[in-house]
Length: 353
Image (cartoon, rainbow, N blue to C red; front, side, top):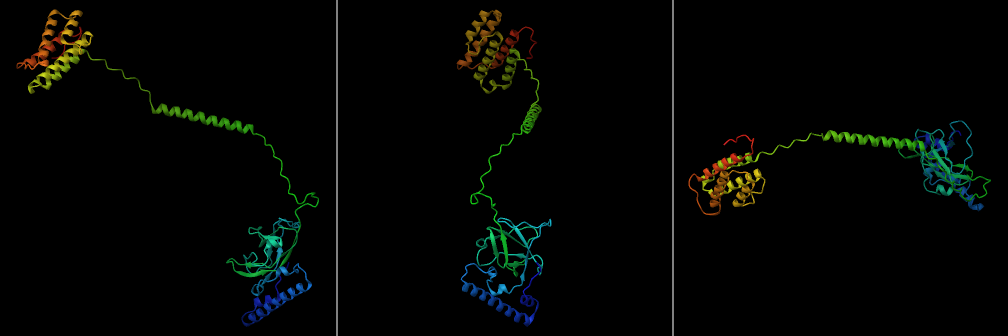
């Protein structure tokens, strides 16, 4: 279509000053008069359907005073003749010779809703379209004048009314046009066994690599060390002599602790005899120890007499209030040391006194 301007609208838009006001008022008067005549004719004829241009009835004189722009069907990029419009199709229109770029067509304001007239305005239209309509029922549909907005959303013009012929999307040979199409039957899909097998091998490979890495990491974290050999036990005479030397260094008799000194000598002597000759000497009395050693016949008669004399001196201080003479505690400790050295196992080196 060529660009079509109303003569008075074009002159009113181009003239300025006093002429613009005069022609503007005249244009409004003509629009209102035309609308009044159309309404009177429709009422006189008694027709319910609106006249062909009724869809273009103005909401107010100010809207009708805006410049009117034609809409033309958006051409197919391939150059083919577009097929007849059907219900549900998106139909694109563009403004013919707009006065400024980036104009867009907005929704109608007031009047009958578009859905009641059988069409819908699509916000996200086709590329290059200024207006995209979708018929929602078949027939000759009336599209009234729509506002043309600039980038700021201000109405700067309006579109001329148009008629849109839409065909039904239901086939004529459809035996049940009012029933929806049945659902498609389920489709069986083949199992991709090769892909499943490859995925399984990949999972097994990753699992094996993870186990191998974990084993290597655990071995590096905990190195295997050779067992440390246990130190051989010390001979019983060395243990006894070391304990006697420690008791002598304590100097208990010098502090008046003779009873404690004698108790400690008795424990060291009993522990040595039990370890040396293989019996429980710590839980035995002095007489029981002497009797056990007599039965074993592992000591000389002189050594048994010396041992019995030592136990007598120790028991008298341990179990009575007897106070030993000066120098006696040192002599008793020395006699025990001598007895240990005499009765140590054969082949043991001499102990240092």
